[in-house]
Amino acid sequence: MCYNKKISSFKDAIRYLESLALLGVKFDLQRIGKVLAVFNYPQGRIPVIHVAGTNGKGSVCAFLSSILQAGGYRVGLYTSPHLAEVTERLQINRQDIDRTVFAGLICTVKAVCDSLRLKLTYFEMLTAVAYIYFAREKVDLAVIETGMGGRLDATNVVENPLVAVITNVDYDHTEYLGNTLRKIAREKAAIIKKNSFVVTAATQPEVLAVFREQCRKKHARLVRADKIIKIPAGWSISLKGSHQKINAACAVGAIKQLQRQGFKISEKAVKQGLAKAFWPGRLELFKVFTTNHEPRTVLLDGAHNPAGMNSLVRELENRKSSGHKLILVFGVLKDKDYRRMVKIIAPLVDQAILVRPGSDRALDPQKIRKLWPDNAQVLVANSIPQAIRQALKLAGRKDLVTVTGSLYTVGEVRKILLLDHSKE
Image 1: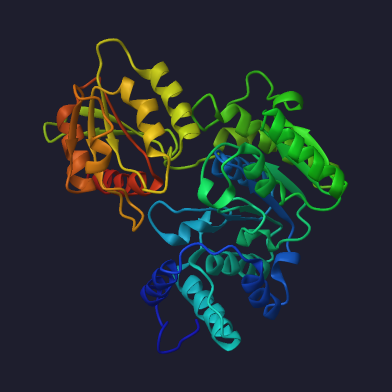
Image 2: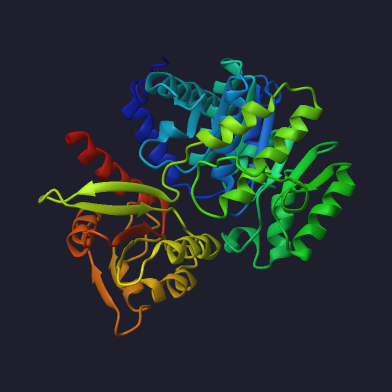
């Protein structure tokens, strides 16, 4: 543990991270590059699978981690955002980093930043800690998820990933990545490095053209998961939703490239990994009970952009039975395309409860209220606990309560449900 007057505990580390969050988003690899140079470039001392894309990144990371662990490897996993606690973002064999170890690393990296007279952003600090932690722990492989885009994303300090995966490209973070698919694709294609292997689920011609051009420049090989990778009939995919088939295919495509590079990963490990992968807050079902001990079904899904909302709606259309209500708890961030998100899901909803997520970027639910049809049954809750209580009260035994709009909203509800479950 590293102690100084500012960071001597996990709580101190969290307070320091929260102060960095005020710096916002700053795209620049130089700051984190200078810091990691002091630690002898840990990002170059671990084998990395680098994962980018608009949606599905976390699911692909979960599949990859599960497969590699089933194959006997010690696997580092770095993802974002977290649902309950920041330590979820850094895992080895799906075990969160120890709080004391985490605080010590934050303290150590802060000391280096102070000596260099620079400040990392929240995401840059966590990314630096992830690379240092995985290198110190000598993981066999690290699965690293980009935060936003790719070109100037802090994770892109890695120079020689074993495999790059770009799940898909759609409209999100347009104020940072560009307002056309081609521009967004260019940002994500920058994780493609020299002589590397690339797997993608993208299908749009303009996006694939960008990827092919980058592969030509970097002498990289591009593999389309939708065309080449097939999951054998009868294999079980643990993550729910039809869209998880292409995410699983991306993971299997990446594993095949690792096998070509000499990694020993059996078909049994691949099958087992797909069947046991777990990724909370994505089409995750909870069975909860009212005060009268009547069961209610709650579906959590972190859809936070139009593409994610379309996937959720397809799943809801399959689940919703005639005569049964859909009760929606919806909280979204103001920098998201919430207008399109509401337009996509509103026609399915019988009753909506709008709420503010626990984030500085949260959108006032009163602004969302104006987007719903005048005849819609819409309530505004004062808090997330109130919202989920209202939803459960409105729902009948066979109705479905769905929580979505942001991972912040889903994370808060999930903590409530887990706490209530632990009391039973």
